[in-house]
Length: 331
Image (cartoon, rainbow, N blue to C red; front, side, top):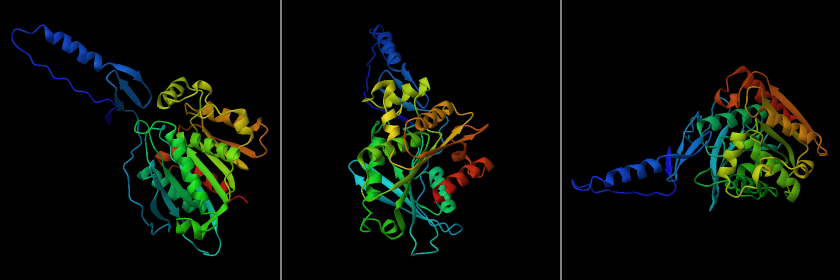
């Protein structure tokens, strides 16, 4: 995918007696095509053109659907048009219409610049969690760089969480949440960039509160935090308003960790993930922060970053999802 931030065009008229102008034009064109910045998922040229590349997980979008095998139903809802924020809601097979069930707010990964809550990859992932954990899920379609640079992802996800909270009295805009969601048992989870955003949301809940809602737990799968130079530089480029290497959204501040707005945290770190140390450090810093909750670290030995997203049938992926489900179902 190629996107031009600052489109420009130049035309040159040649004439037999004016060949001397061509080298200058050629040099100008060559300079415009030089790479100004090279990052893990995209490169930026001198003329402002941005080109996405790299090992991108397929992100073709699929429609919501009803799965006759698992009984999981899904539908899409627009939360806001300005800025544009949508969610995909998943409802498991309901066996007891009287008893309300937990709600999971899910934040997809993709390096803050790729993927979608509506992609087949994340549709299938969240639907699997919903079936396994017997939980309602709200999967957030947040703004991505470069169309909407960071902090759009954080603000959109917070808007989605506030939208969930608007159902606390049973009179919110979404009937499934009013009827089936227990908003005293809310969980927030995400992988990679979504794990990073999950921390920021739970931190904001601890700081600002969320009336009518109890966030019980947070699940961070292979979270994208500071510690890898290339990723640090990428994030700061995508966030023009960054506060440098110590920005609390990338390097969680001790005071934010100490007041996380939930009771339990589950962190996954994959041994062969370049973000392995970042995930472990988050766990260690949270443990010593003075926060009063419980935190658990699960190491996926011999495995790579977000391996489960790519192959839900992998036996280790199923182990990971079973762990997520048991964390949600825990009393």
